[in-house]
Amino acid sequence: MSDHDHPESHGAAYFRVFLALVGFTIVSVAADLVHLENKVLLGGIVLAVATAKALCVMMFFMHLKFERAWKYLLLAPTIILALALPLSLRPDIGETYYTPDVPQIRDYAEHEASLQHGEHAAEHH
Image (cartoon, rainbow, N blue to C red; front, side, top):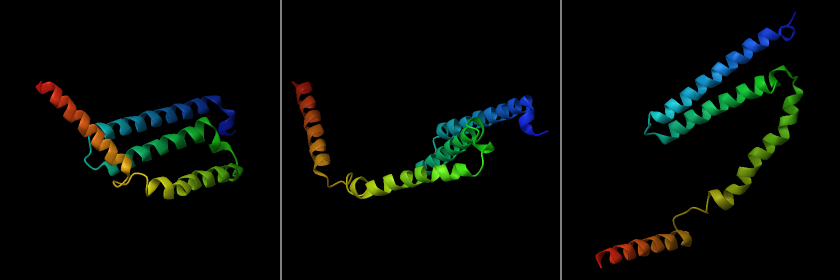
């Protein structure tokens, strides 16, 4: 008999996955509460934990662990699109949009400074 013939074994497996998800969540929250100075390291830890949690959910609760290899063929277009979208937007958004020489940033800073200066002038009268 295989694992598929024993429903209680599925329950035990699902409970272990649940415990793993709880553990991953605790690790993620603890990494955030530690207030690491290195934000890149913190982001890496949180993203790694989120990836591990997503894999647990996909493999067990979405039953991908029990599917054949054709699931990878179905994921190929999604992976291509997921990689193509950020790469295609990078020249427009990632490299030029948020540079310090964008006029909107200077205009916003001047506007904020004038508002703050106006508030200080009103307080002195």
